[in-house]
Length: 259
Length: 243
Image 1 (cartoon, rainbow over the protein chains, first blue to last red):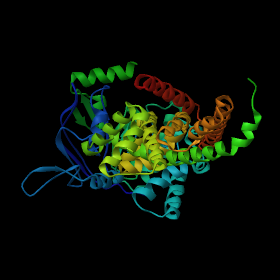
Image 2 (cartoon, chains in turn cyan, purple):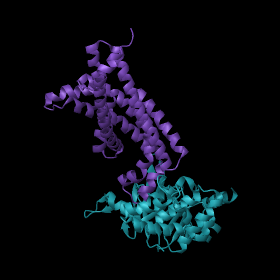
Image 3 (cartoon, chains in turn blue, green):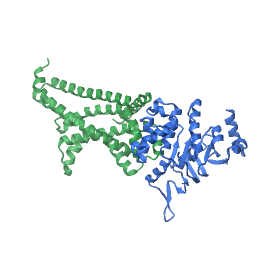
């Protein structure tokens, strides 16, 4: 079992894409083993926030710390902020698992190879070792009989579970999940959520962008509501879902329930 | 005027000698040109100016000037600067360079045709840019770019006939020589037409099999074919504009 063990601190993150401002000063602390669900209307900046944390999208301003170490940048002796070399950024990404809405399982390799290859390439594990780890993890996500399948013959739910196994194989200290069930057929959502729930109970630190309020309610320690690039509300699930303080969150929840 | 069959017998061996040279030139040009094309494509897409700048210059200059002028420059002008290369070598290098810029454009389009999420997940898991290209993007790109690469290769075979102008004794050159001796252009050019045709058909045949092999190996994907057609048609349009 990969015990999650990292804290994340985000300070003053701002990010624009041309005219569009995605994040307007976001501060967030996530504790060890905490599961934080991020909800909010589309375009509120929640996906961008995840991509900033592992520096896939470097922010215009602000800092990210994982276990106290600054991601992407470093401050030199003269107090000047410098970009870290790519090698160091890659090393951080290797320990930060990420799941995508579209799974992004590599279509040029089998399910097994998807889990083996990054271990060999990034962590320099031997193939034998990597395969043993991959098979264990694929079995854990319920794909023991699908290991030799190619992505084009797997369902969405199976693909996302391959992606979960692939991320876990890197021994992540935190997982970032970008709407992991949004492009799944309704009957496949359950199998993915079950695996994620098991991860959460196992103590993995997770930040989950999601529209699954049920999952958020059952699994999250905290829910964060974002709107227009800011964190509007932050609290335990009961409070956020049952007793929203702001009008905007109230409207957002009403909309989700009535649709 | 009837066909004089004795010409086929008497001068066939000389034409075949030229055919052999054409074959060598083309093979060398492909195997030099493809890696050069990959490098140019990567350079062109690089965010670093000292990679992108030179790549763009090479791409634009070679693509927008006639092949014949390029070989004249290499063969007749370089010796003034002390670089004197044998015609055959100049021919191979020029054809490789010429092909590589088209290969580069095809490869660039091929890389762009691989869904962004595929490379994004590779970067997110800690792979470097080149690791993500090698492990994820290139393997998915080859089956997409194979048809347009083949097309360009057929073009290069035909362009190789221009090397006759710098005295490389390839097939067209030997045909011109035989024609000069026999004054029988029809027989001579029929012969080399058939041989060029044979060469290109064989390449096309080989590529079709390679394509099938790549598809079965990675599991057949309908989207791959559609993307290949899209890439090819947009490249055709680009070529029409630049030629």
